[in-house]
Length: 113
Length: 114
Image (cartoon, rainbow over all chains, first blue to last red; front, top):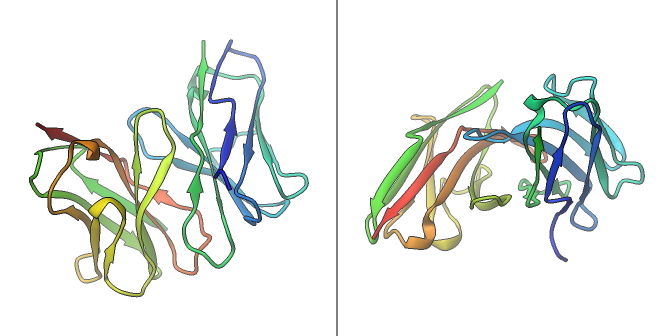
């Protein structure tokens, strides 16, 4: 098992463009989480899935953000009409039901210019 | 609601000296507590976790932490700092039972002085 994989690692986009990130969790992990981390801050929870069901969304997740996990395996996070304030590191994590710890990917760093 | 406060956004210690990173939590329910380490432009790696078993928890790379309910603290320590310990450290809390979302502190940047 190679751990949680995120793609791309870096993304530079112009303001107003749409971007999509992908996360491949550890095999057989039921839960998948998305967090956002801005410079000098700790990660902030955005949303999580149990299998394909999206169970919770933070109020940080505006209507420009949408996440999916269609087959209960990989997940995508899309940001529409990006703004400079969206510039951050987007982290994905996965966990197995019954275990406390979540395992993080290396993140996707988004820069909106 | 749950929250974490990390005292000291920057900590510097000499190589070989004791490392102490402070974390206080607030939780209305029994918490699970975690310490994660983050190297530049990397994701987070779990150092150790408290899940209501032993209050003194040992983790990787020689780190340990003690859960003190009376002080609502979960400070991270290492007896002897190594240059490779230089990184950002995050304390996090979730509700007991596991698989809950994590609430992170703002982090402590640890610098090791040669």
